[in-house]
Length: 75
Image (tube, rainbow, N blue to C red; front, side, top):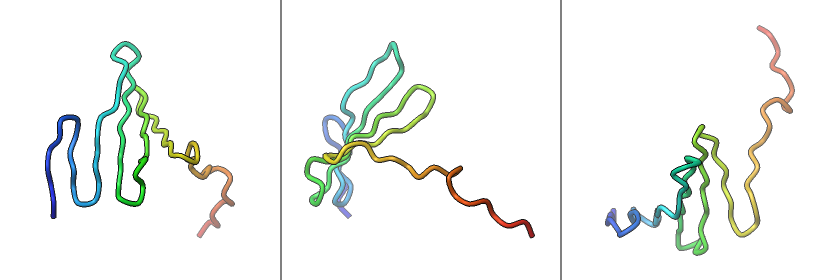
């Protein structure tokens, strides 16, 4: 499988992972992932507390709310 380090990240298989930008004072970072089928890629924003937000051409990806799911039956 192809692996190569680049100036700002690495290529691994069909994925190209790069660091985009960060804010040392506020503590957040952004990464990008590009593939042949997602040429404009995904932008991953990570806060200093570890919260992750993912954006693509279609906007922000929203995770399903675990609390909105029906409760499990007790055994």
